[in-house]
Image (cartoon, rainbow, N blue to C red):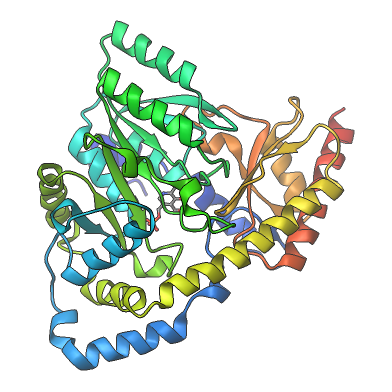
Length: 406
Ligand SMILES: Cc1ncc(COP(=O)(O)O)c(C=O)c1O
């Protein structure tokens, strides 16, 4: 049964599956309304436009698009990334970019390049579970810094840095998701962004800015979600974003922007990991950017997700019992719920499943499994009528659980 497991490496033996994946199996049952996943709305995938563009590319140069490509990315992939970043006030040169298999790979390579066991990575508390998994596997010391409505708490960030300095722990980078954060839906204020850049300079660490949701700002005001990278005078920010949320996650295409001497390292790592990103999908991304389709598609996505978020927020207001609070995202996919202190979201999960509704426990997103009375619910995947019904079930779950516990 356990044959060969004694041959696992330290990392292999200690790999941890994601809490969200485990939940998927249960929440995919047909009767369950799942707010657990973070999957984009499949109804909005531009299948027709993708089919036409792919067809055209293959007819033109099938020999190129089905061949291996440059490990840093094809000219088209890089141009597509530059196109998206221009929308975000970031000016980029091709030599500063590498195309990746999604932002997840960018996080993975970043960790490979910068982290030795014991090095400190600072993260927002809570943060993206996929990044936490990668950081854990690298044997980094992960320290969570709490957030408020404006983003990461600056006073605690400074304290944490002081403590690390006193204990001779090397802080390598701070991992941030400034826009419509996964899991909280919170957006870091522009003032905080400036403060964080100043602190990074003062304490000399890098920032990994992960920005997959920035374009999905409900009111279309991209200035309000201007990335730190757009204000990074000294190349301290390594910026990553992705086509997963604006075209489709299945095309597995993201990118990294940083100084050429660091991109070189990303390039070498990329060669080892998977040789290159998919040339056909890079051609596709450029076709959709260049034709103007993607800009109008993003406008439509904003409408879809805003409308779903509005329905979820209104339903929360209507159905939730006293003592439950939640964030009000200005974009993205997620809302973060805080329950009365005595409620443990993990213990409540079976009650929720009995009420045919699912969520992700908040502690799954915490560096030290904190936040037992919190949960993430997503409005990205379900239709509006279903969202309304699901929030009703969730509110009934909470009332039911409170009455039984109390
Ligand atoms: C904050 C954040 N970063 C990165 C990713 C990874 O996305 P991908 O690898 O599909 O670009 C996700 C996906 O949900 C995410 O929420």
